[in-house]
Image 1 (cartoon, rainbow, N blue to C red):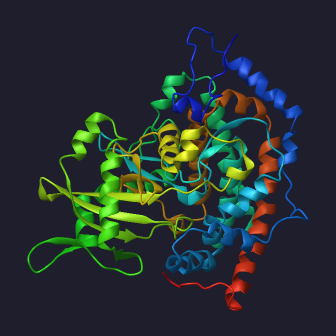
Image 2 (cartoon, rainbow, N blue to C red):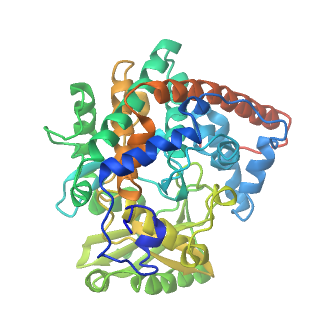
Image 3 (spheres, rainbow, N blue to C red):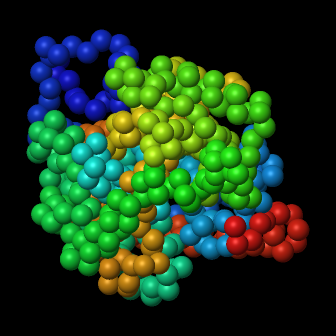
Length: 474
């Protein structure tokens, strides 16, 4: 029996079950044909339309449910960031869109999903060689599901961000088309590429000659931001978020509500969690971590969708105060799409932090060398370096002509992630040579962006009526 690569997804990455390496693997033409056959189940044109189902829940009720279990004092910050702009609302609406996507036609092929592939979840990372690469940077919502859900999440974010940036309808349409062309170009290229070669592909932000074609304006933006990321070292971060007391001892600065001290009990629980986290690291990385000791712990607020979950910043010193290390210890919650997709293997259901770590290892070109998982007070967390050689691309700095070229690169990066966590040949076969799917997804992006507008307006009305409390300008 011939095997099809990419079918086990999370199960493969967890080393579950047996893998028969003597069974031949299907060639890409056979898998391409299988993807083409899926059009009979879900025509590509079926992805075009969006209309709110009669039984669609109140979007504010879905947000309320997603807030259950979060820290109550931080919820006004989360809702305030969603209230401020349409794109801010979209960044936090994963629970709403998961319900909506589950009520749309699906292609019938699953991959390891990022789960929240909007434009602000692409960024810059430092490799072990200290180069800076551009890639996906958030995996909190990762799961297994229809590959097109990630792409729909991305193209709608292009449309919503374009509206907030003041782009006209023609410019927004062109940007969505460029994003889809980037995905199509890369997925069709990768179906013929050696499986190992896909894992050696990096988009170096500061170099010329990338294997993903980049417009000079995009190359300039990535280069500028990569230089900034290169300056975001642990040493530089120390002076931003920490200070010395009168005796010369370092502590994390009190900067409410974004960064606040924790109780002694919480501090001890986080430190205990770090000891457990060390066991999730390879032995050599564990040896590296053993060279550091904890100096201070603080609660630290990040993002939009994550606000309200428990997140800690830990300052450690190694070879003296000149050798700081910052770790982010971030609570891992159940992905919003969980009710609408097949169940993951037990180890990921039992520990959401392990799920997030596994997804980053499976989708990102250069995972953090200190990436691992743990528990704090019985809750699942994952751990990674904070800020070191990392950065984002501020969308407001992208001009009207640069924006579509930039989102084209994002489309290509998403395709590359799906080639690692799925099968590019099946996706390419479903996509085909024409532009039918691109046109359908462009129409979906416009239609669903109208839904986002309506949902955001509902939040604005709820704030004005006092139903929802928000913290402004935080």
